[in-house]
Image (cartoon, rainbow, N blue to C red; front, side, top):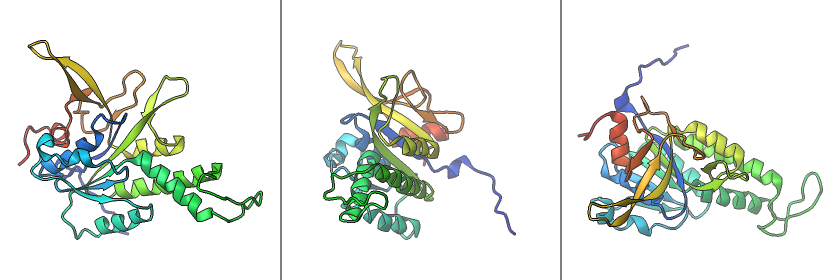
Length: 256
């Protein structure tokens, strides 16, 4: 049996990254900046949340043109998108899913929709609406979403995900807003998990302004991870973009 053995090269590195944080901090805009680096452009943005206005202003994002976007209308559509990308007959070097939190909600609704009017195998009760979400649905969703995220992660291209944040019941931990088992799986799949937030800086003239920041290592109650070679992203990246993250990981200021 032939065993494929190879030596990994940093130049062949395909980043698998999850960006999470509260609404409005710029996660979608960050994903769109993949269109500004030769190693990650063009990017296909899979829009689950329908909040795509932020990527239309190319000047604000430093882009020559906005990314290509596909609006996800139902969960089954993702299989078609995956196989389109897996076959390789396309121009895209990156794909971004915005966001996993909303996608899991869509997936749970998809599962319930399939079970409407069908009796439960244990109690015989039937669902009457999409609001009849049972405990088993979360288990089924975890399995389906885990397979989906792993499949996209394994595509031979850069893969980016966004996600909302959540706080543990005791308030001691902030992490991606996914069901516990799915969150554990997804965090294991990623090379980089960054928590995005805004901070206030002061200019030389004494004026305050907002700065976007990306936490790339665990700090206090925030979950993060940097599995890039040598953890080159450091603790925090100011005003993060996909180009500067890629360049930091490759150890280059500019990549031709």
